[in-house]
Image (tube, rainbow, N blue to C red; front, side, top):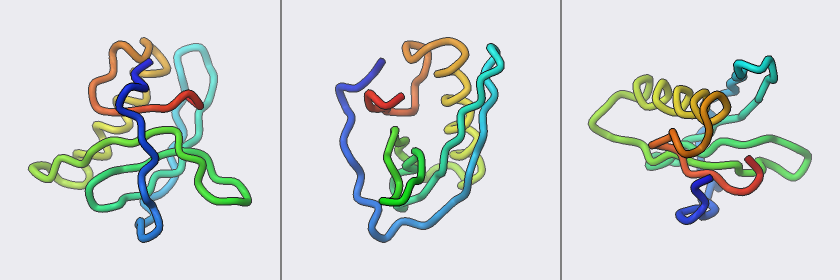
Length: 96
């Protein structure tokens, strides 16, 4: 798991993008809320204290928002189906 670059991202002024649910090949479901800071997508779980960050992805401004979101979802699916060693865009913490 790639945790060397992990850092908490300031999300005080972040924009809510929405929720995504990923079904892994083993049948498990993983639910994330995604927010955008303008430079990063931050994803995690929401509870009564706010967003518990699980990871982030730097937004590539050469591509559209939708294309960046597709990359994020593809990397999350890869993370759960193939393992952290096969992801190339997301940075995760130990919560994952």
